[in-house]
Length: 254
Image (cartoon, rainbow, N blue to C red; front, top):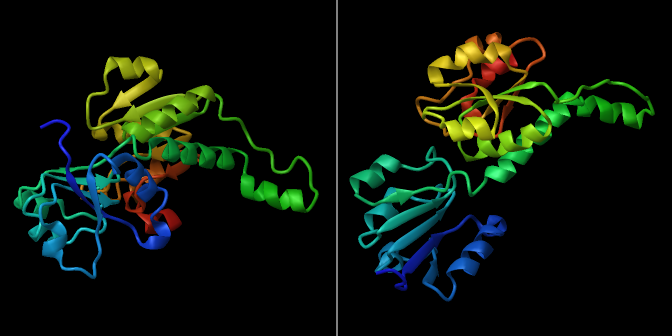
């Protein structure tokens, strides 16, 4: 029933990494539900007895042994966007419902980081810092983001948040997504071009900035490989605030 008091088990990060997430979880759950902290030193069966919700920070702490004891769990809630470190198929076999938190958990932070990287690249930040320390002026000369073409691969929460910020810089935005991007989003973000995964090769050569916003899976691993890196025009920049393995790093180095 709506409003019932639930038994919640929280699988946290190590102590040095727990805040602010633990503080936020406690602030929301304390007083409303019974919150327990997972302790790897205690028996699993007693810790999971009667637990209805498991909150897993990042989806990296769950083991099959924990799932085997989750006999009363009605929801396994991952605080994070991806499943690449989570054995989702095993949880499906155990018929335990799993949810993640794409977008609202990290979209603004990822978008701001991506925009920061774009500005640093445009202004050649590292070279500029050397010039500043050596008291050299007007070197290097950067450029503005205004009018530059931004291609977003994946158009979920973080990509939409970046598109909103890029609009403030008057960038020209295109997007690729596995879903059909609705007309409302095309108008809101003034998308000049939209496509599906099979259109990536046609859109990459036109972009000045290529920004990745994808989960990591067998279908997306090395989605940016040597061939697609060669499709990028000279001077174009690659920004990845998602998973590292989306890019073939060896191809990137060479």
